[in-house]
Amino acid sequence: MKRWAIFLAALMVLASCKKDNNNTDNTDFVTGKNRFITNVDGYNREYYVHVPASYNKNAATPVVFMLHGTSGDGDKFYNDSGWKEVGDAENILTVFPSSWQHCIIDEDGQQKNTTKWNSQPSEWSYCQGEIPKDDIKFLRTVIDNLNSMFNVDNKRIYLVGFSNGGQMAAKCAVELSDKLAAVVESAGSFSFDTTFIPKRRLSVLFQRGNEDYGPGNDGPAIPMDTLNYLLTTPDLPYAFGKFYIAASTHQKTFGFSNNFTISGDTSVVALATFPSVENNPDLFFQIALVKGLKHAYPNGTLHPLHAAELNWQWLKQFSIP
Image 1 (spheres, one colour):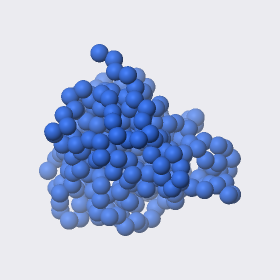
Image 2 (image 1 turned 180 degrees about the vertical axis):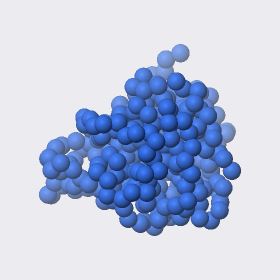
Image 3 (image 1 turned 135 degrees about the vertical axis):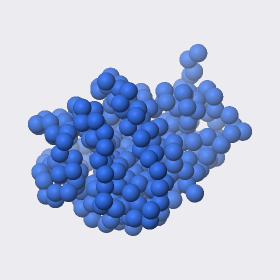
Image 4 (image 1 turned 90 degrees about the horizontal axis):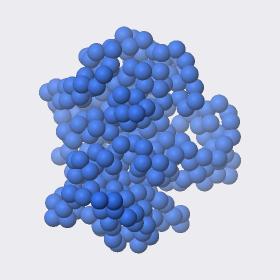
C-alpha cells in the first residue's frame, strides 16, 4: 500500500482571541492556549495545550505532541512550529511540553546550561552531579492528565520532535510505543547504531535537510541523488553518517526490511521507504532528504515546506490497532 504517496504529493505542490489559561490543577481549560504544570518526581514540569475551537467533549479527539530542540521550550514551539494552526484546522489537541534545563557536555566537549530532553544514550552527556529527568515518565503523566481533562482518542496519539526533540522522539518510539500511533523525527534521531526493544512496532518518519549540519553549523549541501549511498554506507562523517545510523537502528529495532525503495523528485525531496519484514502494509519506516533545508523545523517561512501540515497528512493514516 503506497500511503507514503500522500506525503510525496503534498511536497510536490510546494515550490475571536481567547485568553491564555495558566493552570496548576489540571482541572479546567479554555479554547486556545493553556499552560499546565504537573509534578513529576518532585519537579514541576510545564506543558502547553492548544484546544481548537471545534473541540467537542462528546467526540474522541486525536492528540499531537511537538517536542522542541535544545535551548527551546514548549512556548517557543507553540508559537513557531505551525502545529497549533494545524490543530485548529484539523480539530487536533496539540501539546507542547518543555524539557528541563540541565548542565550538559555537548558533542564538542563544551559545557553549557540549556534545556535538553533526556534522549540518552546520545553523543552529549550530563555534567558531573547533574540529575537527569525522567522525560518518558513526564510524557506519560501528560497523557494521563490529558485523559482526565479531554475526550482523547487514545488510538490516535502522535509525537513529533525537532533536533534534540527528534532524538527524544526516537526514544519515545521505543519506550512510549504502547501509547503512540506513529512518530516523526525531524533533524534528530538515534545517535548510535544499535538495537532497542520497543513495547510495540510502529511507523516512523525521519526527515532531515540536505544542508543540515546541526545548530549554527554549515557545510556543503549533501547531493540529493546520494540517498542510496548514505543509507548503505557506514562510518560517514557527521551529517552524512546520520542517515545510515537512523536506517540501521530503525531496521533492527522495529523490524523493517533493508530492501528499501527510493522515490521522489530530487529538486524537492528524496524519500526512502523501508517496508516491514512482517509484510504489514500499515507498518513502514521512511527517510526524507529535503532539499535546501538547514537545521530547522520548517514552518513555511524558514523554508517553503510547511512541516506541520505535511507531517499531519502522514501521521493521520495510522492508529493503534
